[in-house]
Image (cartoon, rainbow, N blue to C red; front, side):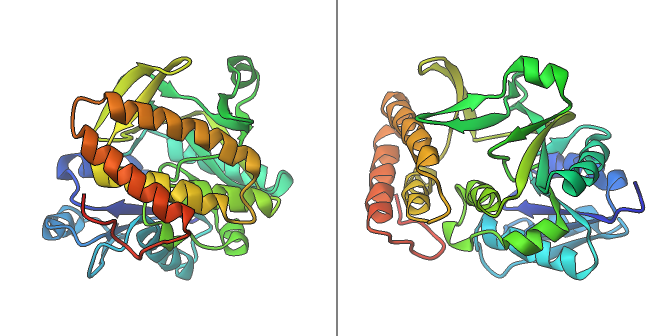
Length: 308
């Protein structure tokens, strides 16, 4: 697999250095190079110290917090310019299992030649709760899990979405599909790219035997909303982006109505969750409402959300 040039891009912002070190150590021997792109963290000097003795591992420090999409694009452009053939995107709190990158790389090589695969992704353990997040497909008014029977029978399953963290992208497909949408700043950056990929006749696959540990929010709650679900609890400002970007995506020509119907169900679930949440309830609802208004009006203020 060392003949395939795999370049990992890790986006950081105020990272937990111990967790970041673990993330790097798990992938370092599985990839050709690692580039960290830091969104102007207070501890960026510590990040540099963490990697300075690692060959083929470098840090790009941004002058301000430009958001996830812009940071990913910075790292992806850097990797492509250095001949990357496959590009692994990771969040600072995602830890790939041993050999996971190799499994993803082999699968992508096989699938992109016969199935026009744009990217592949692993299953991930949600916040260390020993609950594997399911691969999903879009249906009218809901996102459905890929049946366990299908996962048992096939090591690769076609999906409609992959979260960006842990995704391994084909360099050829990335050039054809285009970069991440930087205007979205944080939420739905990966959703928009996946929908654009599918609109351009590329396909996405979940890889059954590749695993990752991943955090979706500051805290995750198990709640009953039609079925038991794990919902992440974020700081209030995140709900601005979540609700605004859902409506901004709905305005894009490559985004199908079926996806929007499913996302509306998710937004209603999140709204109920915010109302029932014991912490920062009113701030969360206020930011969600402001996001809805800006999204409905097609407003996409650059970079930061309004103050909560």
